[in-house]
Each structure stands twice: as structure tokens, then as C-alpha cells.
Amino acid sequence: MNENVKRINADWWDARYRDGTTPWDRGTVAPEIIEFAREHPGKGAWAIDIGCGTGTHGRELARNGYRVAAIDLSLVAIQKARDAARREGLPWVGVQGSVTHLDLFRVKLAAALDVGCFHGLDGEDREAYAAALDRRLAVGGYYLLYAAHPRPAGEEDGPPGVEPDAIMALFSARFHLLERQPGFHGQRGSDWWIWRKEE
Ligand SMILES: C[S@@+](CC[C@H](N)C(=O)[O-])C[C@H]1O[C@@H](n2cnc3c(N)ncnc32)[C@H](O)[C@@H]1O
Image 1 (cartoon, protein in one colour):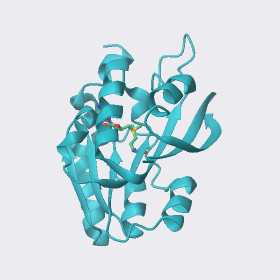
Image 2: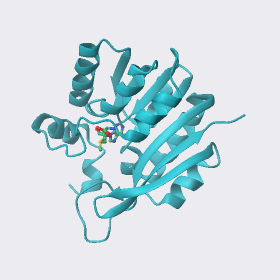
Image 3: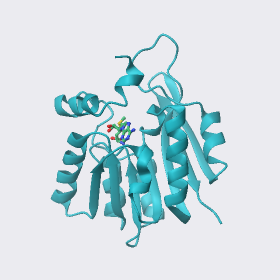
Image 4: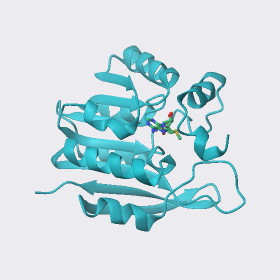
């Protein structure tokens, strides 16, 4: 199986979460999310953690007043995230499923978070994800996205990544860009994007 095919396979993700080959899962919340949650406390509104993994980042939103809904292909990851949220007594629900079905969540979202999931999707799935996110995000809602740039030729590991131009084309038609912070994902570039849905 090549790297891109593995990534749409729930068993492949489950195995990684079971044996701990999850280098992204460091247990520390991204500073961008800490800052966002402090500036925009949830006050009981819903947020979604898209491709939540073990839920580290989404729990920070729950600590700051959001009710968090989470989705991930890996049931093992969802179970770990659920256990961690229960230990802290946080308002958190998770489902195992694909982020191409965000319409599963029938609530209007005040915030959406994606740390490292979107950059693993192919073109068709990106479209389905963006369209569903647009339907579910409330006017005034925020979308925080961390995505790596494309994997350099010859490199086999890591997410396929996505061109910033493709992110711009897909989301600027739907949301207003508030902030883009460039950074690094190993040897390649990455960005934190913060978008807002306007009238
Ligand atoms: C790099 S991990 C990031 C996990 C988490 N956001 C974090 O930062 O710790 C990517 C996650 O996306 C999930 N994932 C990948 N493709 C998915 C899809 N189509 N639908 C739902 N989850 C997916 C994987 O199971 C994995 O947990």
C-alpha cells in the first residue's frame, strides 16, 4: 500500500494509535489554539475537532466553554480521546467516521478545528469536506486549520500535504481569511490558517 492509500484506511490509523507510532501526538496543545480559545471562549456553543486523534487540541476548546464534537477515522483514537475528556469532566462527544461526512453533526458550529487531517485528503474529499463545513459553520463562526505543504518528491513518509494556493481557492470562496501564519512541518513549510464565516 502506498502512503496515500494507507491514509484512507481506518485499520492503518488504528494500528498506529495502538502501537504508538504517532509522532504528532505529543500531548501539548498548539499555542495558536490556546490563544484562540482565550480570545473566543465558547460560552456553551458547539465546536468540532476534525480528525481529532486523541483529542489534545479539541479539549482545550472544551476547557474554554465549548461543547466539542469530534470525528476521526480511527476508533482507537476516538476511545483514547473520550477517556481523556471523561477524566477531565469535559463536554465532549466523538464519533468514528470520515471527515467527508461532516453533515453527520446536525448542530451549528461556532468553531471548527483541523490540526493535520485536511492535508491528508485527496481533491474530491477536500471538496466534500469544505462544502459540508460551510453548511455546518454558523455565521460568525471560526475555522482553524493547520496544514503542511506538499511532500517533497522522493520523500515517502508523512502526509501528502496541500498547496497553500489550493487552500486559498477552496476556502476563500466560502470564508474570510483573518490570519495566515507560516511555519515548518519538518523540512517543509506549513501554515496555520484562521478563517471566519461572514454573512
Ligand atoms: C496527523 S493526525 C492528527 C490528529 C490530531 N488532530 C492531532 O493533532 O493530534 C491525523 C488524524 O486524522 C485522522 N483522519 C485521516 N483521514 C481521515 C478521514 N478521512 N476522516 C476522519 N479522520 C481522518 C487520522 O485517523 C488521524 O487521527
